[in-house]
Length: 369
Ligand code: PLP
Ligand code: MN
Image (tube, rainbow, N blue to C red; front, side, top):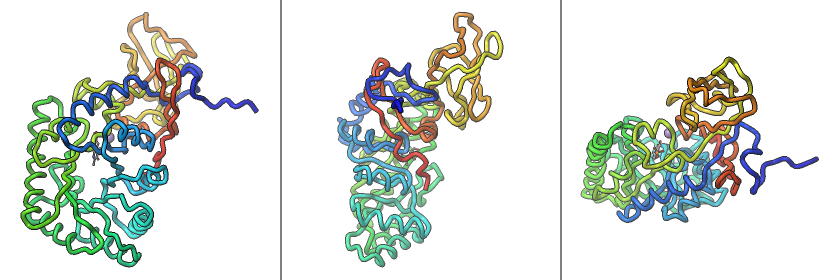
């Protein structure tokens, strides 16, 4: 059998479609921009791998100056650790017996993982399971604080102080800090508006950190921020770490909100399958290749309008005759929401000027637990 699997050195024009491709020059420029802007502040950068789902990319970011990484879910942490990337903060609460047991087993092997808690019941369940496990080392723990997102996080003030006391009394948890993610602000349009709202959230976060210190707790880490706000978070005294993720690749939703400081570097390569009229064709990228929760994807070449035709199909229409597309032509589509789009694909084909340089698996694809 002839091996037809794409290889390093192949041109992207030889790839089957739909395929996820990354323009390395643009991605590397995005990484350089982020580190140039944020590193001189002295705040640690712990990029969020919920976007890339790739141990190779997490390591590339460490090589560029990051300090560790984040994952959203425990099952992502399991995969990343097996791939050798172990300096991880799991940013979602770990609740329920099956997950707590998995956490214990992961921690038994990888003592560097960090967790967050936002409830007494959650903290105590992990503490009890660790007590039973016989593992002596306590697990590094942060209090997850609600700074306005109202997704997870204990409320500031008394509730946060009460939870910190619970955690401090848990022998198998070692309290090191606070996480306060202001996810509701990442896509606020207008830089000044986003900045003002971010600074308000940061005040809640840093004042709570200070109150916990005054109550005698060890708060070394104050972690927050995403692509849309990290530049503001790092200016706030008391913030020690930021967690941006989407900046590597960007998407149309982010670009529409925060502008083009970072550029689109990831595209879904797609083939024109059928002509449905003088100015409308069908491509092989539908709901299984591009997500729609944040609006429709765009074509990289301006002038086309994309529409979903189903699971496997999408349409492109145009007004300008010069944009005529024929069956067999290819287009590059710009995702509207990068994290769930990447979760639809097995591999990245990373190319420079069309020549594939690296092929990265999407390691934590489907790891939603
Ligand atoms: N931190 C947490 C806890 C998140 O949930 C997210 C994204 O949802 C991020 C950081 C990264 O945000 P972004 O991809 O917007 O940079
Ligand atoms: Mn997202």
